[in-house]
Image 1 (cartoon, rainbow over the protein chains, first blue to last red):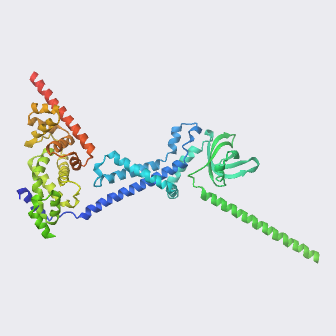
Image 2 (image 1 turned 180 degrees about the vertical axis):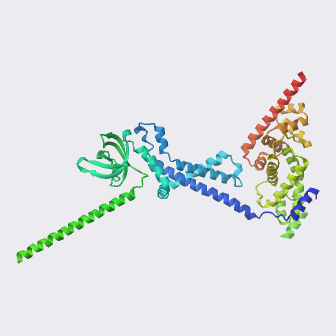
Image 3 (image 1 turned 90 degrees about the vertical axis):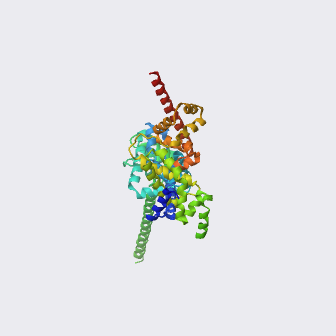
Length: 277
Length: 205
């Protein structure tokens, strides 16, 4: 035994140094792997929302925009979710770096692999409708998220001069074959029904929000080239409420009719009784 | 179980480092054998990369072995033990020496003219260096080099580690290690050419 090794062993004994238990390292390793899995999962969820927003988005509007397409396209990008994918990509990178084999791969490959996993699993999640569900959940639970989405959509779709309007279906003008929609600012627009294709027909219901591409015609007229449903407006509840109202209206009307009938029949009965007298 | 390890204690010279680690976890006294195996190698390595005094190096080395003992359970059997303990030494040198304000460092170990020979055998240009410079000049050259470059040169040409081992020690991808080695050689040549030019100027005057 050399003097140096003797010193080391002596110090270990005198200071009662013992090896750190194996479970401590295992736990640390599991924590990093766990966080890595969570960050990839959350990144995937974020990507599924991006895919959902892209599918219901309006990235084909360049032809209809009179302004700067780059600005409008930027407005349509789901920044929040891109940011979210990038953040979870970085967290995944950090955790992978701290795993046992983390150092063996180049930084850029780890980062892109993290993003790649998010894209792959995110696409699967999107296919199962999770992007839509997460978006809806965020709208309901985070007012800020809802407001910013609403603002971005309104900025793009409240441009009647540029041929873009969006609003809630509030009525039908059977005489002129027009659909009446009310935009965010409370203005009513009359849209020619001709633009309603079979594909969109089921969407044109009272309470539904629709997007219309076309040309402004006078003060409140709008010649529609295309009417599309607002894929991410989540207006089904509003429609249900209106539908319920309509149902109630129908029920009330039916009730009135029945009561009228009853009244009529009682009047008739009275007439008969009087005649009999 | 204990008797099995006691039997192994008698065969220690035949045990690999990795097997010895298992023995140490059962019989702490066996750690002295591991220390002895790496004492000289690590002293040389720490001296080469830190340029510290012998006392500083000894302190660092004590920390290296104590830290290695504490973390024996973290030793990954997929790695070579030498790579693992060199990695600890590398990290300790960084925390001990490099946080001290930068100062001109020279590599003081006597065997460092090896580097010149090895570099010379690896490239024709470097062969010329061997003829032109003294080992002291080579030491000065190494002392002037960037820390990263100096360390890969030391590991590759003095410690004779392969790319995989260097990658495990420095915790960098193998591709990065290869790049570092190439850049280190380039910087070494540039610095040696600068010395050559300065020497020629001196002769002219």
